[in-house]
Image (cartoon, rainbow, N blue to C red):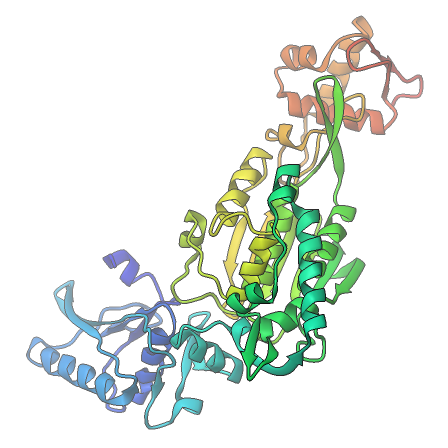
Length: 483
């Protein structure tokens, strides 16, 4: 880490201590929290609030290094071996202790015990891991997936056959083309066993957590639902519409997806002389956001997936901390680590997942193609959120709206002080030539085509002008009651 990064203030991965406390428990919570998370650095000899360099006398600094190293090694289980170095800043010696992300989770303070002595890093602070967090750490430490854990619920051959038929039928619906439908194979209980959706014991079959989630077992997983809401404005204040979807996970995804489609604008574009409907947001990205939340959420964490639509964005929030190996930047580059392996395998079979790790990069690419602001990925500590931003759409004289052609439209709420002047100029040009096109207006006014479309759409809405005839052979008419 650079000097600038090391001294840029406390964060998720950096913490400062002015002195080396005699009681090592004052910093051991942070040590185990770093090991249970993505790692981090403890910097001794720096005042945490002001970042003023205090430093240590050179004659005692290496003794303090030994004291820190021994305390960490003796106090934690499993053993943590820190990387400790002395760094000179402005002639003063500070001690930098690097704790790597551990593989043998959970790490805890021996004197307190695993229940009370396991800590995690949340929003730049170290806090005691709650019960569900501890369970997550145990699964991570043994490289196990929660959805593959076997329940006590027996399932019959008839139940299994019906489950397989439903997966196959939904996979057919979601197949992209005829060829894909023809290649799709029916699945059997043996496939479910290999995906660890089922476990066999003494000739009986038992459902795993993944099987129960996919069948929508509300008794076992009452919070495995998706809450959808449409809000007025840009904050969570006034509901316009809201619903909660339950049942099989794949059905929840379809219900939530259709809820969003019902509440976003549908425009159109002209291709090969035909008018083609098109939504204001890329629908593949909408589905990807919801599928990602269902597939990668923690089903141990309390809370429900929330899909919220505001005037300016679509927001999808899923419960659960990000895996320690995954960062926002790694996600953008396509790195993926599957939290629920059985559910992911099922979604892949059903054509709900195209390729591992491709979802986030594709989301950014499609947003750019639509002229949207770059999506936002937010690590909220105990939750993860994706924001897909909306924008105002331009409409031509025939009501044709192409979301991919709105890149020049302003995304803020500022008012164009030249609107009245542009209205007057447009009216003058229409008066001289009623068949003038928007492209010609763009060239005469020196504006972007998107701006011309926006101004004229507003003028039509106010009744200042109207369009008669087709977009190619029609003409503009100035209303007798114009403002």
